[in-house]
Length: 474
Image (cartoon, rainbow, N blue to C red; front, top):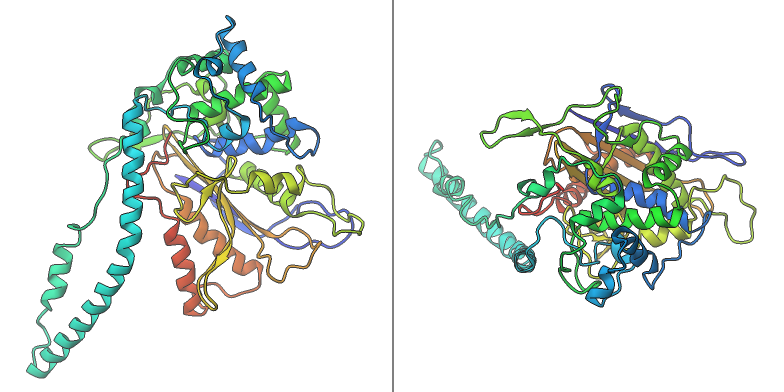
């Protein structure tokens, strides 16, 4: 069962107005604690952990990587520093953007590099085939019209055109898909061992070689964020889970807790997966202590909305230059949020080919290539996937066009949690966000709106569909 809730942000008047206490939205079902999975836990941890660099600071990253080296050195306790052995520097920024070169679940460097080459080739073929497909479609439509006119003249109205019958039979012949080994195929995905600390879990990969030179390529990595959690613990001088619980309390996210097996958690959801025969079965037991930052928290759609609202508020609330601040400050400074939401070079985004990865978030930037053409909205999102879990958190800031400087924050936050493994949710969340944004702006929904806007909505949602060979699980 998936649970979704969408929240609209409307302008608030008055002095010192905080995030709205009431919002128009919709939901169904009781709030249940469901696993976030890899990815969504990443964005959650980053948005909260970034405050370590000082209260509402600009999040100065340690470019020399001292905290990273210190975290590894403390874990090994024998002075054998991994980063010194391989003669490279890994910074916090590289860990945040999955550019560190630390492996994911695949340990074979050759297989990883070969797969990345196939991915690039597939994207090029897909982009190149769009134009030819459009041309062939137009020619095919013309031929169908001619054949229909011919049949009408002959009085044969019941005969089916050959082009239509052949199209259904050959529709799958030209589909080129690459069979990639999913995360769920690796034994490391189903670890049942309990790790006493984040430093202990570093032993899973601390002696493995880097996949590439840090900063040169993008590789989504759960283990990179495990190392990041060790950096956070060292910088905070506090146990990672205790530190996160304090930050959850600050944002009133009282239902967000570590996914531990022993505690009795009210309304904890059961997790399911389809087996090889296509039957729905219970997921196997796993212990998430080896990847707290990368996919080890339980939460609810309401808590995720609170987090999304806090990020969206922090991003937009800022007093105009030379004027007094009339609203409460955000959890983070707008400059800090802008920095972590800025696309990073050499990154990619699996769940939306038009976007790029930033720091713990996927970003699609605002763009419009032609006048009266397709307008692509700026939005932020992150999907999550783990054993029996799929999720997405999507933020659609209010359209900056026509928004007065210094006006209250506006936008839409969509949260979807699903207790079923390997479900792609980003395109669904985007469609919901765009529809609710029309309501927020006072526009009619797409069912009664101009057909052109419907096509633009469909185009952007279609572009957010992941490649067939990519996987959102971790």
